[in-house]
Length: 199
Image (cartoon, rainbow, N blue to C red; front, side, top):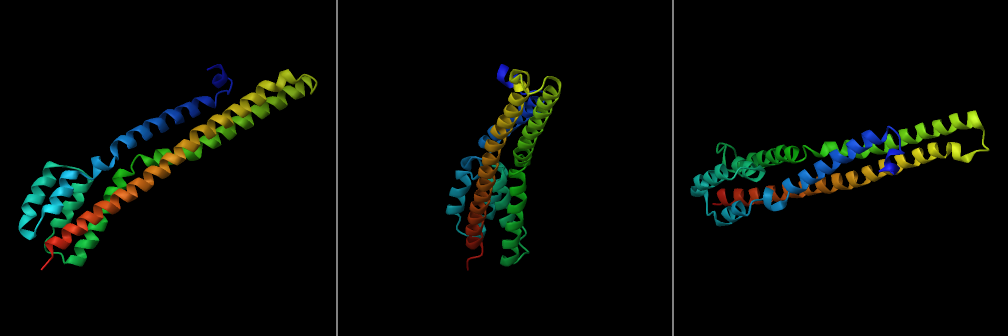
C-alpha cells in the first residue's frame, strides 16, 4: 500500500480506472456467456420447426424468452410482406442492432486501455519534474534527495501499463466474442428462414 501511495496523486485516477475496468470485465464475462445469449431452448425450437405453420409457436417462445437471440428470430418471422432477400437484409440489420447492445460497456474498457498509459506517462513527467526541482536545490551529490521523484515516475508508469494491458486484452476478447455470437445468431436465423421459405 505504501508502494502505491508513493506514486503520487496520479495513482487516484489510475485506481479508479482499475476498479472500473474490473467491474466492466466481470459484468461482460457474466452477461455475454454463450448459453446466456444463444439460448438452447430457441436453438432446439429452430431445429424442430417444419414450416410456415409453426410461426405462432416461434413468436410465443420468443415472447417468453427475451434477449438478443429472440429479437433476431422475431425479425426473421415477422414482416411477412418482405421477400426472402429483404428478410435477409432485415436479419443482418437486427444483428447489427443487437451487436451494438452487447458492446455497450466495451467502450469503457477501450477508453481505459488508452487513458491509463497516458496517466502513467503524466505521473512519470510529474515525478521527473520533482527530480529536477530537487536537483536544482541540492545538486547531484545527494541521490537520496531525488530518488523519491524517480520512484514516483516509475510507479505510475508500471501501474498505468498494468491497468491498460488487461483492459485492452479484455476489450479485444469481448469484441471478438460479440462478433462470433452475432454471426452464430444470424446463422440460426438464416436456417429458420430457409425452413419458412422452403417450397
